[in-house]
Image (cartoon, rainbow, N blue to C red; front, side):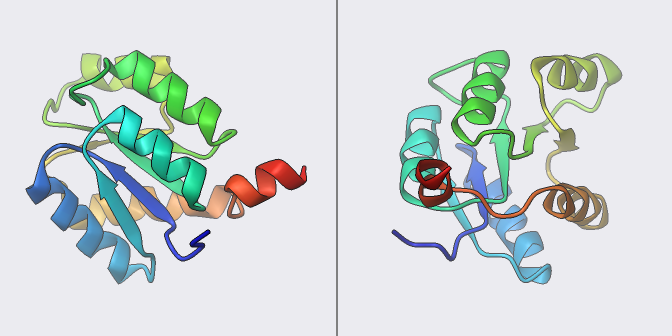
Length: 134
């Protein structure tokens, strides 16, 4: 098992993934990107993450399903929704689905960094090894 990745970025947009990876690296965090919910689940089974960034337009699920599945798979690790919609209704839908927070894409680096810092500060690392040991 690889324990070095701390941020999972689930988005089919390579530009958003690259920008978010850059933001994570400014915080000293390593990330891994995937393009679907099924790929995200596979990554969660193989690696340890401290936060999950999940696009609201993954090809194999809707927002509510993605947040619910990822939050359950990571046992409460913060799931932050990524969206191109910058409106309150979309924000409220994400929070209602169980998201920790919401980042409008393309991400504003200071805002994304603030949200990541807050999310990382809430939970110690959890992953497959800690789930099986508990």
